[in-house]
Amino acid sequence: MTTDERARPDISAGDSREEAHERVNRRWAEVLQETRVAQTGVQILFGFLLSVAFTARFDDLSAFDTHVYVATVILGAAATGALIAPVSLHRFLTGQQMKDDLVAIAGRLMVTGLVLLSLTISGTVLLILHVVLPDLLAEIFAGSVLLWFALCWYGLPLYLKRRSARRVLGRG
Image (cartoon, rainbow, N blue to C red; front, side):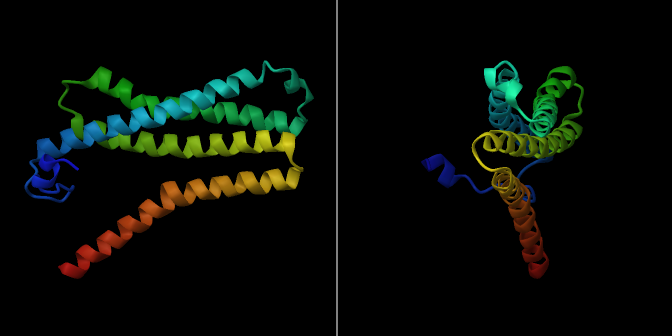
């Protein structure tokens, strides 16, 4: 932590020291940074998924695995679209005095994209593990991965949000 960071007060969404325009600008910058992080992962994964169809072993997939593959590719494409959409919104709507709306819409797109990405990753895990493990074990592991994402990406943030709200109510 730098000296400047220690000297600067912590500015949270409810901090009255932050002006409304400062808050929306900060939130927009945060959304764009989050988008950059998520985009890289989804693009690499989607590229991998597209290449699978051109491998020698693809023809050996069972009907179930082929369906999992198709669903996973579609989920990956949808995740890519949702996670890159905030960039398009920014490009088309900059200067339109809509930043509050952009932040809200981009936030929803990010959550949607993360749901789709967690399903894509779980489908990819299932597809890969079906090749190397017995079916039931592969399905248990893939389900465990999906549960892990649900807990890390949704359960924990929602729990912390609820706990924070209870603390604020307890003070008032």
